[in-house]
Length: 214
Figure 1 (tube, rainbow, N blue to C red):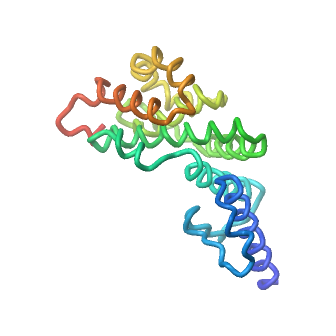
Figure 2: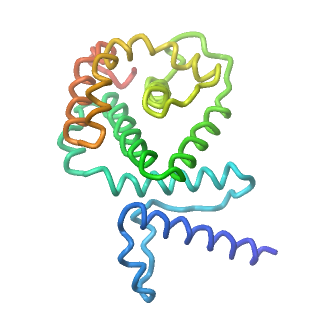
């Protein structure tokens, strides 16, 4: 039974890697059957927990995301525009991840399905009634929800809406007037990253000497 399970995991892992290579256009090595498939390009695929359909969705979505990053995200452009503080960088990283995942979701319905289902599953798992103030909510968590709502049009559950509510006013104040530009330049990483970095630089929530506390 154990060997059968391991064989199944290995077949699933190889299928994810093959799909990721096709998505990212890194499929040339597949033509050479003697060449070992490089998993490092798409992150570590540890398939220890495959207990239900949500686990399969999670691994598919993570593999798709890694492939889309390789296809659509240029490292030099990303580094060129990266903010100079940790708090801004964390939001900048979220913004770029949403950008290339959104491009992938526009490219293939299967990718869109995997990403949206995985995000929806993650939202369902969010449940904590101890939130009382903004200090209880990491700004990065709230910002990811904001980006999902604006770009993926994902319907947030009540708890996720509560998380976002502590920060949404600040996000709207900084980003609302730029959303049209960002949507129009979603395929232009230079314009998109540059504008995002500029927005983050001007956000009032980071006006502190030690913004990492935020």
